[in-house]
Length: 324
Image (cartoon, rainbow, N blue to C red; front, top):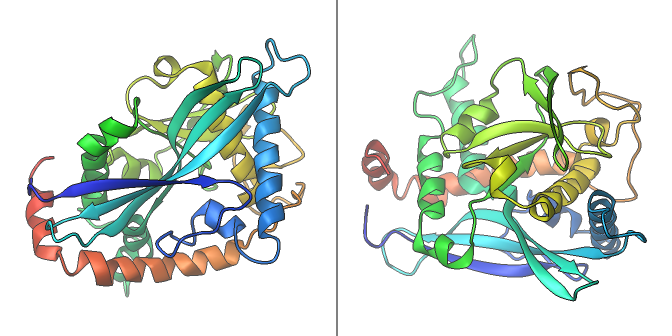
């Protein structure tokens, strides 16, 4: 690998006073909440929902349901390709930290959770569209996701990652609304009941190129399974409190962004197909512009093409052709 290929990490607290920076992908879930006239109330309410969810799941030695609170950091990863000092905002994730008010200790949570990437925007919003233009049948380019996957694995294996984080990332996403999920017998005290999909999704295949496995669990107090993408052993590599920090954070965001699925009034059954047209759901008191988010993904994909993919295309083709 090019010796000048380096990652730098910056972090900022995600609290009710958070304002998105110019370099943040504005389709990023938390950034969308932090815009407009309701921004502070949005953030305050979302953070309170996270704390309530955490305490409901971490109920042991917690009789009043107020022992813990969750602090969130936005982790921005910048990539310098040629040692020039010019960086591109390659990846953005969330880091959870747990405050135990009984012992006055701060416990490190999980890094990952939410996942944002300009290159992923490029792949899904630009590359796929160009590849299928004029085609009668939808298809995927042979090397789809390969560059992004290698960039992500390079980051996780980098000195910058190892110096800042003690464990591999866990990314938690919504289930796919065009797949059917079947509940199996396996059950975990924190992650809940496990589901398996009837077939692999494009997102699964994309994240597999990032080196990540996936399992689907519906935690206690939830109404639909979540997708957990991870390295290693999800059930044994992380403590219960670490897993709860991810469940409470991403479960809350999904209630806001996908209320038809995650704030539905009926709990997923043994055979479950998510439905984004489900009318039997409740809305949170949090304003979120889903249509705007879809439009912006296309703009950000074009930004990645212009400022990242095309200027370094030759380098990427040579680097991507070799193993990481």
